View 1 (cartoon, one colour):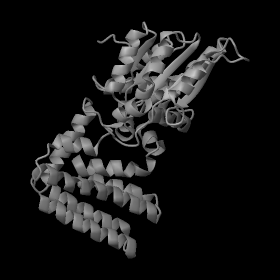
View 2: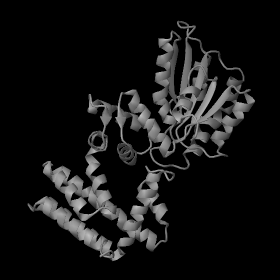
View 3: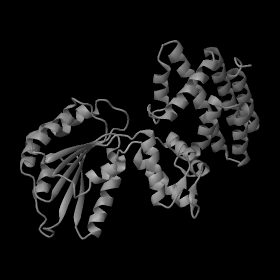
View 4: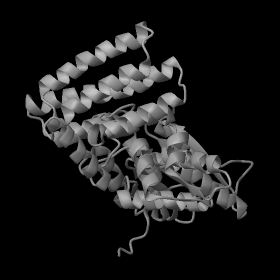
Length: 376
């Protein structure tokens, strides 16, 4: 059994005020989780009678000369108070491989000398945490600068990479967070949470807080709680129906649909349910074209469809295998026909008084006839 210290304890220790150096550069997919860790650390310091100010700066709003001036300016009213200045690089709204290079050129390169001069003789009691919310590969100019700064400043600067944990580590973190709230849960509930919400620790922490409140006096948080409470609850049936379409049975898909309709959903919710079913079939159709015609590997297509699943997760392997098997079960002609039928059902749902259950169930029967034809 590995004795390696859990990632969340390593981060908490490295970012505790007692271990901070005058400068810390934090980067990685989970760097934004500092927004949760830092306020908690400051609160602990204040409880212990060690005042500590926390001041954020955003590089699209403030430049380095202003930030360094703030670091060197004593507070005339609070001379003994230590300060953490948190400097944020902009976050990407979507996957942007050029963001790090642009961030370096725009927000760092013009001020390298000023930053180097400051850390040659940093202000006492002031800690500057610089946050880049994303991965940085070896050789990136942004990462190279802070590595050189660490050496030239005589170790006044340290670097911390906050990578996304592996699946077992992330699951252990979920259990730990629930334990702090006096709760337990099952592996099935954890898997469902991670599958739907992904790996973002800030989002996961929000969902765990809601689950804790929802479960009330019950000690165990169930899979049903996860499906009911979490931020994606309106799309819960899409996840369930997708699993049935991919690796389940017609009976399972019909039962999911019946349970959904038994709750007497309004028209918009029915449309949303059907849209989730449609999105899966459409994605399968596009994937079939890319794999068969453009010769794109199945794994590459799957990763684009499921960006929230990490490749080193067992869940990734299970879902990939099910997706690949479902893809093999259909011909391109089968899927093209299903897409045309989807359009017809969608039109009838929106323009006629035909019962939604009959329309959706008829389509499901057709889908499974085609999917399972090679098995029969």
